[in-house]
Length: 392
Image (cartoon, rainbow, N blue to C red; front, side, top):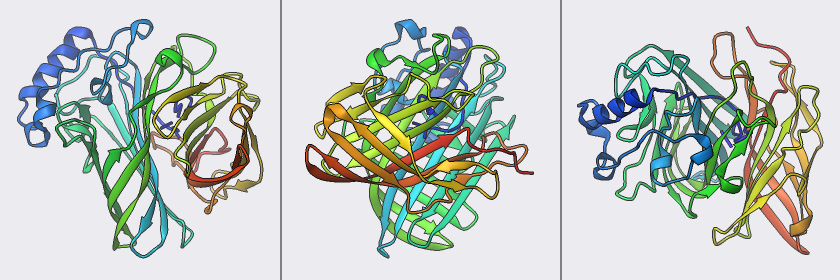
């Protein structure tokens, strides 16, 4: 994602920070197993899962299902969900649900199910047929048990949550509702988790201190219910899941990025990102991942693809100029596709006091050709760093 530098984060987008002392992290893990507030949420597999403190980045090796959950040895972390859905009314919808956590005072965890860290979350629904966009932001600090992350209960912010209900900890359940909108999905990954960048090390800039780890489920079957303007619909479609955990050097800010999630009709999936420098130029770290229909992974090194922005949409709220059309070329795959959105106004504008920044996150359509064959696709695009002002 959800870079997305490293999801960079379609991300976007936002942030979560896990940092705790090793002794305290072990104490928290032990407490979670016996805390009565966690028990109602745990599956047998979760109750038996041991999640040790993550090692130092240089020694890190992905291990699943351990790495579906929290990594207290890293300063930021997020869980990001997006997708394209078709309703029983034959309308098309997009959705985004992302959970962030940031811990400005590492090691302070008063409860296994809740802590004094910062928790925030974003939820959005795009009604692509009616041309309407609904989004909601949550931010809580210092409210014990209001929000949190652990391998027993999952990830939650109030009544928004992600759970791992099955014995294998593969399938996931997510739920969110606010005002007249809501979503409840059961998610089943159709491919194994995809680790981005060789060895799993994901650089956010040219300094190794600004790095972390990033993986995705690039093709996820989704089914459930969607509520739009108080109307409840059965829906189904394809989702994308991102999970990233990383560190930033003291005083460093999140970079700006453009992040693409692409699910082609020939069974291939693509994650592409470009980091942008403070002067607007594109960083040489732009890279991505191609996932074959059988789940095989091919890393796209810097310079192996080109993403050129096209037509823009001007936000009347933030003043940002967002490229909502793109041309993407991957010469080694003889792949050339055009990216466009059915709904330009998919900006999640922040107000003063919001934890997450203003950014654009929206459903996309892809058309083009690969090796002389026509291809189409669905996906999401996340763009950060374009907003010119902070709304009151």
